[in-house]
Image 1 (cartoon, rainbow, N blue to C red):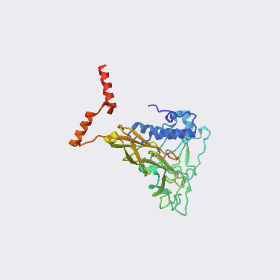
Image 2: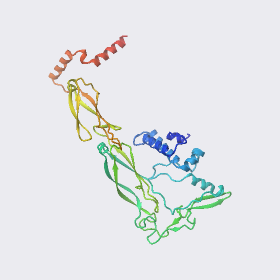
Image 3: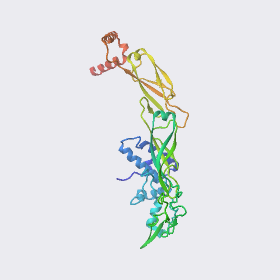
Image 4: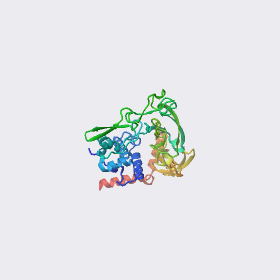
Length: 377
């Protein structure tokens, strides 16, 4: 089955700039995120497609390769889009593939320089659940995240204190070696240093040459007022430590808001169903509603209120994220039919029914009149 064009997947034109790509990606990712579409296999597939498309198009080299060769540029050993995998995003690039295949045949290519084995750490994901009240007020949460941190003994070099990594003798620090095969000069990752350009003859006893160790860290996370379910918070540099002094990855916190027993959220607005007695609906009355801001609001029910009627309490909803605006609270009336009637109560209701006129029940009277006209006509 043919893959969808990456530009169509994100809903942008082929001339879209970086800002347009990022905006489109955020919109599509929020729409199809698994947390917002639980159990929806189609949404999960679309979410992966959106991630793949953005990972390719946000990188100038990969985008240039895609614009010229299409999906074929990343097939058969080419580089995929990525997304969250075993902790991080995909790595590599079309230029690496090009050099691996053609080497010096096309004029020598670009010489790759080793960075001493330094690699960026993986990105991490942390799932956090908060209550609707916490979403309303905001909070500062303390979380504990198991992650890789820089080794404090060797300071990330991987070498035993007093020693240091040495330049690889096989690739002379380049991290790659070339081999001639007929007309081709093939460049591959150095098998001795695994592309790092250095080797560690005397590794650190704590990290065993990796330059980092696994440890549980305590972090403080600021949850702003009005944050919605499915929102992602990025903590830059709080992911896994880089390899041998490389930059750390990022930590992404995915928030979910627990369902509330009373209120249902719709954007910045809140909805609440309130049951009232049949007599209160008929004769009118009042009742108090507790709101999330800690106050109580009085709702006046006019005489003859019908089931399902809504009352709006302005400014009693959720705060809008990073603004001074506040949503509204909508109260929906549910008229409760009395149960377990006594003999006297039954008598009174029957008496009321007998003396009732059409004006007391205009909706039901009108409905059955229209039904009669329809079938007789």
